[in-house]
Image (cartoon, rainbow, N blue to C red):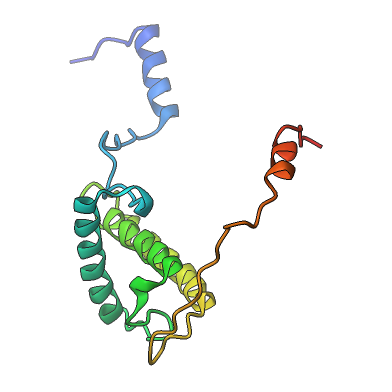
Amino acid sequence: MNEPEPTPEEIEAMVAAQIAGPPILNRPAEPTGVPPVDWRRLSPEESRIAWSALREWVEWFTVRYDMSISLVPPCWWKHGELVEELSALHILHQASYDKNDTGFGPIGWHEHLAQAKDRLRRVGTGCSSTHDSLRPRSWAGQTDEAEWDAWIDQSHAS
């Protein structure tokens, strides 16, 4: 039995489907992982939860990836730059292994980890045996307010 000839509209639809290629899988509407932690804006309750989760992950991470004490010293939590870097890695790790990931997350995680190791080396806390308290930078009295006001009132487009 012969099939009927397709109509011009059906032929046009088949050609369009061939040109479009295979269907693209829809990404989930919900973002993967968890939202980043903005350490400056946490309530006391949120802070305790975030710190506990980060500590648990850092302890797992440093053992799993055999991170040296020179990269992540035991006093990591006392160094703001280390906290920010490790927090970002923590969030990325969760997103990379999220059940909604398309499969590229784990390799992306390891690529980002390689870059992060270079940044961790540059932090140079010097706390490989004991904590070395760094004197934090202070802006108190450092800015001439009149000069600042004059500066921000100008266009700096050029």
